[in-house]
Each structure stands twice: as structure tokens, then as C-alpha cells.
Image 1 (cartoon, rainbow, N blue to C red):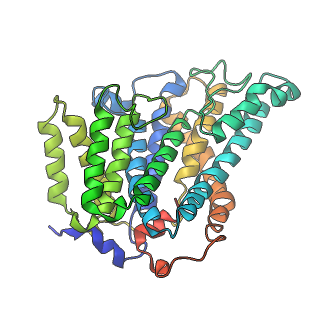
Image 2 (tube, rainbow, N blue to C red; image 1 turned 180 degrees about the vertical axis):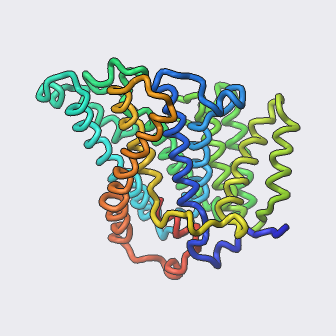
Length: 367
């Protein structure tokens, strides 16, 4: 079996499956939400795994692994902390701001119960925009979705953004300390953070944010992605290792080490599927990254569907949501995200040698 070094990505261009994997991850979240948003709880993967995992959790975990890899490289290849931060602002805020504004307007005119003037001037409407732009997640808008099977939640996907942004800050801290360019120091620092993070109360020493149940796992996924980047010279991708990692998960089933084994197996498998030559499917990989648009628009679109057809089968609900969400994701990429990304270099010229960036960096510039 061919073993593929992760460091060899430095010689390639966009020969990877990242856009496809991220799109599938976003669709997994949409698919998973089709159950609670139609009043059902028996999501297929949750049933199959006895509640350990559902498709929504898996999709977000995949996002965080890839993000940890690409964001670490983005900082490593940035000529300054400012350029790194500016790139993160451009990747997150324009699309998020547009999605929030469109959502506020659309849900009122399609499914709102309050008079328009009262709705738009309502303190909660203004707070919805302000709080979510500041990553203080607010789910409700006045007079909207109160009768849905999953009531009073306009966009239940936004909660992950605040934690991902905080991890961007953590990457910057590690980068400023020089950890991203020193494998031994980075690995030691990551181990120390992990030990602190696992000390009760779990996570309090790392996150100055409310710690939701999924956050420790997502943090581990992000850190694993960064670990893969920093140690890329020592990591080889091959199918026997993929299989061995999942065998370890099976062997450790029911033990305290199972979750850690699962996170590693899942993350390593994502790397294999994204970058190994034998896994490449160039004819299926979208040229553009529509995953962020799918992620931030799916939930409000699904709630609109449920406000009119609350008893649809989840599979039908998911299919209708895809039909409506994809045009919004295409709009978001071509008219919001991509134009915003063109502003990345407006304050500084690229560092010498940066134009020959490796393919992971080429993807990181899109994050």
C-alpha cells in the first residue's frame, strides 16, 4: 500500500478533496438537523452509535479538524499577526453579516407574526444582529418560529463560531510564541494544555466561554488538525494506518480512552481522504468552497420549511432544504465571500516566497 507523506503537499497545488469534504460535512449538519426540526429524535447515526455520535456532530468535527490544520498554516505563512487576523475577519464576517441580515428580513416577511415596523424596531431584532456579530449567540427573533416543532430558534448552527474564533486566537498565541515552528515545543505545549483542559471543571482553564457538552471534543479536533500541520514532516498517510486507528477505537470501546482514539482515527482518516493520491476524485470536487454558505443558511431555511410543513419526513425535509440552500450558498461564495477574500492583501504585500504556497496554504487562504 502506497504511503503518502503529508509534507509532500508542499510540492503540489490544489490536488486535494478539501472542498468536497467540507461540503459533505456541511450537508451532514443539514441532514442531522432535519430530525429535530421536524419533531423527531431518532437520527440514524445517533441510533447506530447508541447516542455517541450523530451526523451533525460528525460534520462539525470534520470542520474543526480541517480548520485546525489550515488555520495553523495560515498563521505560519502570514507575514504578521495583523495579516492573519485580517484574513480571519474577511473569512468570517462578510458572509455571516449578510446571512444575518437576509435572515432577519426573510423570516419576517415569510413566517413572521408581528407587524413589520414592530418587528424591525424590536430590541430583540437589533440584539440578534449585534449579539451574533459579537459571537454572543442569540437564537431567537420576536414572533418567529414559535409554533415550529423546534420552537424559537432561528439559526441553531451559529453556536460553533464563537469557539472556532477563540481557537483562532489560541493559534495566534501559539504562533507568536514560536510554537508553530518548533515541533517539540508545540507538542509539549499542546500536551500541557490538554492536561489543564481535562482538569475539573473541564475546560475552565482554556475557555473563558460557556462550555457546552460538545466543545471539548471540537477543541480536541481543532488541536489535532494543528498537530498534523506542525508535525507534517513526520506524518505519512496510508490505508493500513487508517484501518489500525479504527481497530484501536473498537478495542478501546467502552473505556475512557475510546473518545481520544475516535478523534484521532476520524482526523487521520479525513487527512487520508483529503490528501492521499489514491483517494482523490477530481471530477467530484467543487472548484469553489460552498460549505460555509451551506452551513450558515441551512438552519433558517429548514425552520422556514418546518413553519409551513412541520410533519415532513426528515429525508424529504432535507431534500427541500438542499434545493433552497444551494442557491444561497452559491450567492454567498461568488458575491460575498470570494470578493471579500480579494481584500486580504490590501494592507501588505505577500511575504517573499509566499506566492509559491503549498496546496494546504492555498486552501487556507480561502478559510
